[in-house]
Image (cartoon, rainbow, N blue to C red; front, side, top):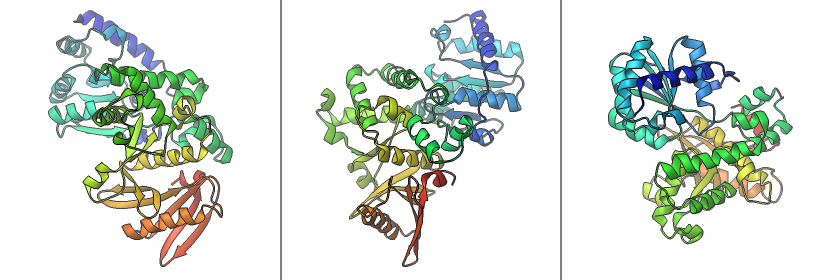
Length: 402
């Protein structure tokens, strides 16, 4: 239990700190934040991707006065469900109708309080770093009364604006290694990304989901980071890291995905059973995390490029698949049950790999029934036509502008 006076002190302290922050680079998605009366706006994303800063930019642009409260504060570690009554009295006392809550999902039954605020005419903005906890709780108590959006680390275009550099090959190489976590882009200190991964594993997964075997969770995470772009299967991993059950692997995969550390994409098929029983390809949600947490002795630039293209597509589409039949293709994206893009990624196209990459993409296009596809390379361009189908080869710096 926390007294109202203590809550007031935390609100005042956090607000002073919050408002004195540098708003930094104005994010591209600032204009896309959904704001509708009587609806809560939910912003989710990996820790330290800039959610709080995005709230600050929104506040400075549209709301001069608002209550801001970050629940991930040691002074609020004793906050209980009953304390929402005291928090509400403090909000009423201040007479402000716009509320910004950071990481509120760590408090039990928070969604009931949000529902109350909406009924009373408050405008509410919420951020959180766990997609599943937010969606499950919102689906139960705020059905039809919330609008969600995801925030990712800096995109490539945001990255070059932040660093004030030109869109060129050396910028692409820098981004492949650095990624887009704002604090790491700013200072390049490895501990930023090391501690980020540790915070996710301990606070977002081990504590919240009562995971006791943290050592195995860490080992699995290092393995997945190192194997970006590769196929992973719970059944095939059984016995590794002292984990004996496929169900445990699947559970850990789910936790890691919900915390926005990894994404696992299924094989393209119209059958959900086929998707479920085939291995999934794993990608990390920021290439800088690979730089600082991979245990590989190789730079692995081809896999990094594939991961980078995945992140670009993931910003646009939620449904992404890989294709595998006689040939293979890296990405098929879908929106509203329609295929939007078919994309192959290869660091450098040469005589040895051209047929494999080209034929895999063409096969996917033919089987799916789409007439245009893309091959993304580091810095090569070309166009190929066959039987009415067009394949365009893009340097990645051009593809990322699409």
